[in-house]
Amino acid sequence: MEGERKNILFSLSPILYLVLSILFFRYLCIVPYPHPFALSLAGVLSYLQRRDRKILFLQSAFRKNLISVFPAMEILFFVGLLIASWAYAGVLLTMMQLGTKLIRPEFFLPSLTLVSAIAAMVSGSSWTTAGTLGVALMGVSHVLGFSEVMSAGAIVSGCYFGDKLSPLSDTTNLASSLTHVPIWNHIRHMLRTTVFSFVFAILGYYLLNLWVWNPDLTKPITGETDLSLLLQTEIVYAKLIPVFIVFGSSFFHLPVRISFFLGILSALAFPFFEHRLSLDVLESLVFGYKAETGVETWDLFLSGGGISSILPTEFLIVTAVWFGAVVEGFGYLNEILMQIKTWAKDKFDILLSTMGTSFLLNLITADQYLALVIPARAFRTLAIEKLIPERDISRALEDSGTITSPLIPWNSCGAFMASSLGVSVFSFLPFVFFNLFHVIFTVSLLVYQKIKSKSS
Image (cartoon, rainbow, N blue to C red):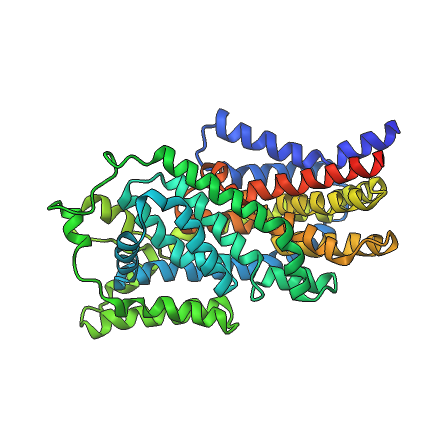
């Protein structure tokens, strides 16, 4: 027993190194963005701990993990171009003008969640929603004087609720196919817990909105200020065409990178027909758009995007892949999984183990697809042996693998949300009510059912 305890502690040592490295770089070295350095150092320490292992295992794991996250890195590249092109063409400004006119401040935070949820459900992609509509909604938040971290949390909540229940979502289809559960059965089974968590999240945002919104202090959107004059200019509805193209392409199952590429081309058509397309657009696409509306606060928000803006996020993902490759290639991950499978004895243990493993893989591999695939392979056969319905496994995969992915700064999903919305994961984390409520609710429900089954 003592030997097993030592083995599991040794297997978990890379995670301990990661936590200590983050604290070291953040509070001793005063590095404002410590995660890439912490992941690199934790990977090196974990490697030195097992330097007797063949380097080929590490190379193979690094190559495999890098290939798995490369599509996410490619999409991030297009997001940088999309934001810059939409800002250059005036698409973002039009979306923000429209949002400012339509969304009522007294219901602002719940509205952000609902609008994001509907868009994600229609498009089947939390990334598409956050990278397009989410950016515009952050602008509306800025205009109305709401906290950007609260707004980002509300947007992420809506994006992941809609993504989770959309039959067009890649993660929803992946979870159902891995467990051989028909897609609509999978979605119906998720509704039992997901809707409850979402209603609580909306209620939480409404109460938070009542607490933070003060009609006397909210920035005015009428009157003679420079900001109000800018917002009261005529809305060019034609500039919403790129938005419909992006979401329409997603609806018809075109790859996200193709949808974003079409969104970029359609946006750049406006400055072309307005005879203001010049070589400056190349500078904007590479280094980000520099807005010159005459309103300083508005210029700060409209400026951004470009390839250069996503390079720190790409670097973060590569360092996360390095850390995950060490943990996987040198056997740490397999040892942890073997210990978990040994511990899981009944239905509730297996479901909790599935959720815990998914979260651990989100933490280690930085990829939500691996956080779905590996636990499905590890626990599906065990679940069948214990006569556990496969739909319970598919729901457990999404309850943890999908939901927790944007809550980890170095996970590709968390990095994407932070890069798109301009708010760090640790800043918006306390306000992602749906994701937090859902994990707490599902784990509590499983623990309660386990206790109830033992007492009966």
